[in-house]
Figure (cartoon, rainbow, N blue to C red):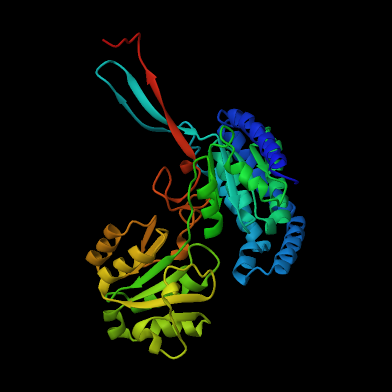
Length: 421
């Protein structure tokens, strides 16, 4: 792509096709949308060899670019992950159709009957980095909610995303729905991203899915509304009243299950009372699992830890690294999270109901958990089938963005020759 003019022409073409498709999708029967998603799932499994071959090309390209192990893990596909993609498509297909749902209704003394009903947003632009599975997740949720979607995947995932996109288009074709309902930007050129961000009148909302750099770029340059997905600086707080066995299990899972996802724990906060009762067991568990623990204060005296710097708190490592700090009870944990968190996900480990209630009330992250791993911060685990991202803003959508969150609403007002006095 030679310049912004050419990129603008490309996005203009995709946008106009998407707007036409969105008109059809808004009225599409639920059965047709479900058929498309199930057919896409069938295609993912049937074409698994082709998708994995495309993914191998992307991994080679990513290694040449020097991507980190965590980023390579996000990019990598295998049989189990493809099965997971197909499963997610089927789960979205089986969900209730949000379009047309009556949110609430009431009667007025004037004789009017008023309903607030869900309606599609229109055209959604999704800009994401090295996560080829987002191609299926975003396409599925947009389709289910009656929206057309324009996908711009990361340069490293071009082949993988393209192969998965072909499966989504096959599903649309099987169901007789417009193929322009799910489109991919067919270039690595960053000029296409800038063109999407300025596509007022064609794209109704942009959803960035990636690191701080991508989200910051989108927020600073976008001329259309944005559902922000900021860093996943997730905290786990081990309270003095925590159950030791539960705490050990949750802390290890929250950090080590998959380090490259936004729900991975990046900071462990330990109550001084917990340390007095149980010692440094949580730190030693992490060290034995191969985690680099960047510890502050007394915790830095534990053999094998690295002394933390101020920059380690409020940092998204996306790797086998965690920051650790002693705090004075739940108030100390709350103060730390308010200072260093990204309002994504926080977990408290405690058997004390009042302490848990205080944690939940005092913090305003999109997801707050008790005695559970932050790795559950995922639309699929919330029963949404999939998600486009975890929205950390406060307008329209928060937390996992599923099909329901991709709708707006309109009012249907019925009278009987009713006039206003």
